[in-house]
Length: 408
Image (cartoon, rainbow, N blue to C red; front, side, top):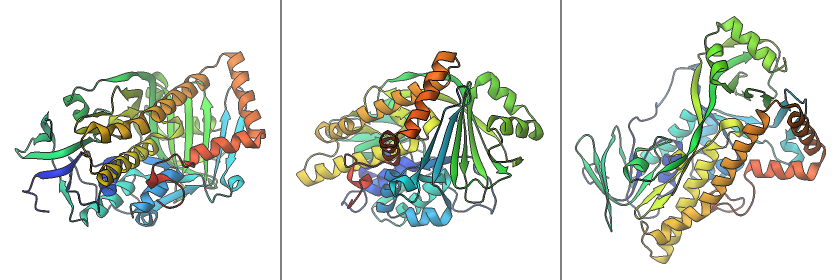
């Protein structure tokens, strides 16, 4: 589609993983689609270049990406399966072990660099004549009317659409411009991320230890390294960031109890503050919010992008239903179907992760004993443990069609 034709059916603001997935899910339905993004993904990168941003994709996300036609490209670019997961408590000593083989599954999920997922989705969009990529572009004024949305880009272009989708992250400009408030709080925690060499093979296993100040995760990468995500207090984080490499190696080895042998080279470090955030509404006439624009979650279980992909799949299903019934894709009849499908489930997951964070971040002896006993009991009681595993995998027929087991 020629870029000067700036009237569309669906306008997606935010071309990250979730926004690009939603745009891909809308292809082939007869809609004119535009995606606004400030910066396109790198088309390639030098061998060995470090990327600190990774996601733990569950089976529901994998099925969604398979049905969007990009999973083979993602695995070729680099997806690292994790087949087991070891979780243990530093204070009480309780532990639990998950193994996909117990459910007859080849793995529990995949660790994938965010840039790999985004690039595969963008390549799919670039091949579609139904999609216009407005990039680089940034959001200016926004106006919702009874039958359309009008968006001024800061380069002077004006874009019109029947439906606007805000997929522009936790600091969403779209959410702010349309007056949707969000509730939540900042945690007194900061996540430190880096890629590290480990002395022993990670065994395609995710390792997570709950420390009194927050969880430390070692996530397996395909090249044998691990991506670490260490969520800890602001004070502790500043101390860790100020250490030289030898000092950080020592801290990591102690924190993970030497489970992976001596820590080798540590790549560049980055950190980000942690928060819980939930939009008061996901939709208005002509508007829907998905992904982090609608909700931000503590990363201790790695569910953020999985929730976002389910948002995209649920919104795509609502739009398909509107098309089938000849209803307005920007009307509340359509958009509330999406909101009903996702808001409650997202709120439950946010509450659960907040509860886990508070329970495992408490060193009070009685609570430490209780949670460690609970971990060990669940580990020994197969039916409950398998229920947790199936939920984490993204199993179940209550999922949107794109993410559901069986035919999509």
